[in-house]
Structure formats: C-alpha cells, structure tokens
Length: 214
Image (cartoon, rainbow, N blue to C red):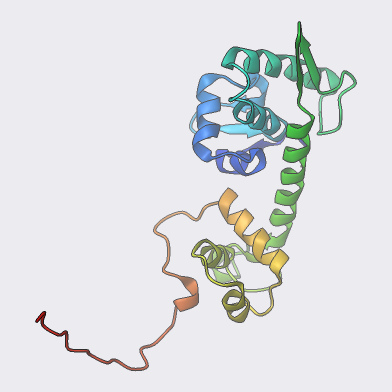
C-alpha cells in the first residue's frame, strides 16, 4: 500500500478521523485536489488526502472555509511536487503554510492521519477471506471467527470480559482492530442479532401476574 492508494469513503473516514458524512461532503465541495479524489459510482479518496480532510474539519472553528481551502491547495502542490508516490513523510517545504500574518501548521493532522493509516493497515493484515472458510466471510486470520461479529459485540457495548469469554483466542488488541476493520468495511445487508447471543436457548420462563393499581 502507498499513500496514494485510493480508499473507499468508509476507509477514508477512519483514516481521516471524521464521519462518513464529512468525507462525502469534502468530495462534493471539492475540498481536495482533483488527483486525490476519484468521482463516480465508486468514489475514492487517496490516503494522503485524509490528513487534508482532517485539517479542513478540525480547523473549522478557527479558520474560514476560504483560508482552509487555500492552505490545502498549497499543501497539495507540495505533496505533488515530492514524487510520483508521495507518503506521509515531511515534504521538503515542510507542513507549515504562511499567508501574510497567518501561519498554519499541518503537522498534527499529518501525524494523526499517519498513525490511523498505519493502524488500519494492521487491521487489514489481521483479516482474511477465503471461499473455503465460511463462504468467504471476513474472519480473524487463522480462525473461523467472523470479524463483524466481534465488532458488533464491541459496538453493542458488551463488557470486555464477556467478549473474551465468547472469543477466548482474541486479546484486546485484536478485538480493537476487528472493530476498526468493521468500521472501515461495514457489513452489507441486514445486520445480525447480537452474535454473543446467537445460539442461546431459553432455560426457563416465569410469568409474573401484574398487580392492578389500587
């Protein structure tokens, strides 16, 4: 993977650290340089464009839209000038943009996106998919545990002890990475019920007579 790899909007949201709605909004408004975006039915955003999205929304309370877009254009030119395959390393001209009295430092946004990008790559490496294993359902590599089942338990707010009991082979890191992968690659179709409760059976049933208000 390179920093110019084109990501789906759900992936770009994870790497940018913003919501999916914000990613689509950035595409629609032309926030990013054209070469960092692919339009059409299969929208894509380059990984290196993610910190620029993070900056656009992260600095909204301090800078006007015009100031943010102007700074993004400057940084975009610097990234393009580096090489045909830019990465998250500091460009020769740095991440600071100066415009008159205004000085804007992109470094925190670049660093944050780079860390999220690396963590997402670890999440991708954790997951495997094969037609011979659960008909191609994404699973934790080396197991038959569906990634989205683990993530659903996390999203449902299940206590970590209960998740560990349901998936004893997974540690905290792999559980967190599974949730990250699922956020970037949401399951298609109707969501399943809480996976930890799948296969549960009724042990007893007790009916309680409701008292009439007296």
